[in-house]
Image (cartoon, rainbow, N blue to C red):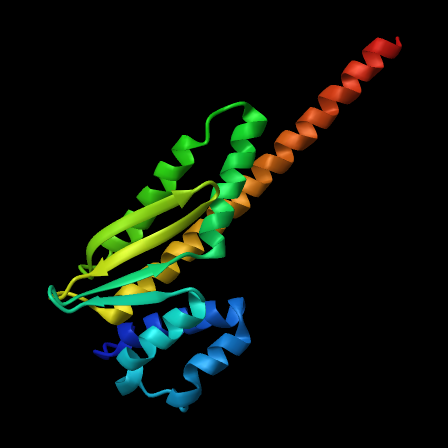
Length: 188
């Protein structure tokens, strides 16, 4: 936009802060308390604080022998996608297996496709919840780009959730209309 070399970093940082603010303003205040006023020179230091705010159950494991850092976390938006997909599958009388694959594809697209920060990725599904295990690349990890890809993933899944909610509402209203028509025919 303006040709500044730090412009992309600032925009990615602002997107993450905005997402966290919309999710939990208090968590944003806590995450930025030691970095206030915000300085772009400290952007990379803020990444894990923002990630801790966005993913409240973030667990960071470090393997000293391989020098690999592993992030384990889940998020209510991802779990909501699985729950809504399961509900829609039940209404339509179908299996819910495809929703696990769809969510895994979305996670792979946003985390692997947008940056070279991921060395390995595993999705652990238990009923209608998912836990992600992401091993960060020791050579190519870009903190801001990786955080931005996670925020974009959550925003995309939120849109999918809204779409699924609409499909469920339409399916339920269609069932209500069918029952009303059947009751009217039986009464006649």
